[in-house]
Image (cartoon, rainbow, N blue to C red; front, side):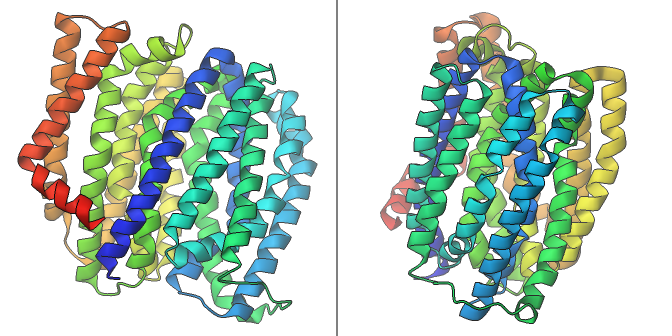
Length: 477
């Protein structure tokens, strides 16, 4: 099967999984926003912050090293498996040891017990992650899609049931814990057809992977603080309730990207790892950004235009501060879309040090901006600071990508100007409806979504891809 067919087949399964998971997550978010107070989302956001930080060490970048080095040696994989398992156990003890200090730092006593609970996920995750990576490397996207859907749906159902029974923030974390356990078990069972760990460990045999992992981990740590600096600042200096507002706004604004882009990159990264010439990588980058922009830009633009209607309709009263935050954060989402394929390309050139360096520069830029935004403008100032830093990051990423694969900016602009223009026209039509007819209520909100969707789809079918081409693409899948 050629690369294009592999990509289409992988995209089909991962897209189905992503669509189902996104829908389930949106339903969960909508229901919980009515059941839980903003403070509960703030507490869970801090727990997720801790989980995401320790995930950096649990992975060590083995996903990238195994895929981009196309590792097949069973002894090497066995050594990596035992390293991962050991890391999971060490993280479990580290989280339990630091739980009390974290609760004191954020002045939130509930955090201590919640962190103790979430620490259990790490021995589980690390037991199955090598098998998950190998399923991805071997392009077993159908298997991965079914595992992801099953685990996520069960987790969402459990979370909602617990929330209805007044478990508060605990409902979200227990749902996550059970979902993780199910996925890990399935990864291990399904991945065992590719790899069964040998009772073997050789430190020197995995030296290259550990060097690769060192840069990945360094990049992960710096990226974590760069990407979560505003959450740390809000939770500590502004308040847990305000962190709840910001968390909901961020989840909605970055929601499409956080679900769709990993799907696309999961399919394309193993393929890009096989491409070594600059022209091939440039074509891959342009095709991926073209696809991502046409998928994500209308979602972001639609959210920008309809946030004032959607927030009170879906989440009810008390969530109004999220509206202005969303209108800023959608532009952060635009930046994230167009730089999403850059890291895989840099990894395919075996330059993890560049990714690490870019992450360091990013946090050095973001830190003073967040300080100034918080000091002078509060919560909305943090959102604008994030946007400015995202624009600077995008410019730096483009600069280094240009050095690696050659000139691409003109072709990129030609790729993304149409979806950007279609989005502007879509937003204009929605705003016109709001001014002439109305904003609030189910009928007005539905009408705005339909109008925006018809405008964008109509322009896309007219100027980008015809209905006939869509039918041919469906047949090829």
